[in-house]
Length: 140
Image 1 (tube, helix red, strand yellow):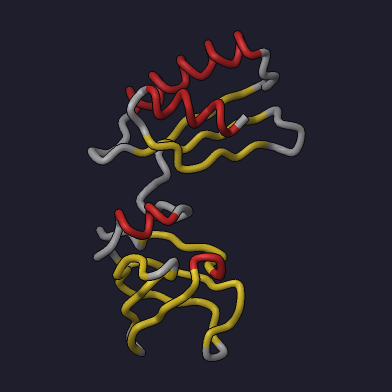
Image 2 (spheres, one colour):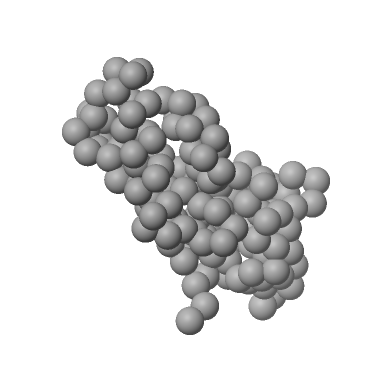
């Protein structure tokens, strides 16, 4: 179903960040992004289109929520680590690096399928496969 959602969202000019669903698929949460920032109208447009497509494709759900990923947007794909280079992130590794799993620093991008972050302790290089979770740090 994620492929179907991604096709619809991309067709409307947005990026699909992620899809969450409740255990039995009754609630679908779709997070979208666009370079200029997501508006309520964007969410409404995507929601309307997905509802139509789900009717045609017989996708069974009770509730659909479409929203932006928020200021602390998760970084999930390799392209995210390239796009948001220069921004501060929080990163959690699946395996400890120097007895530490949580890091904060400025994302430098990707190098040979590894995430590069400039931290207080110096440059951190972590294989993309070893990144458990990464999010932007909001600036107010």
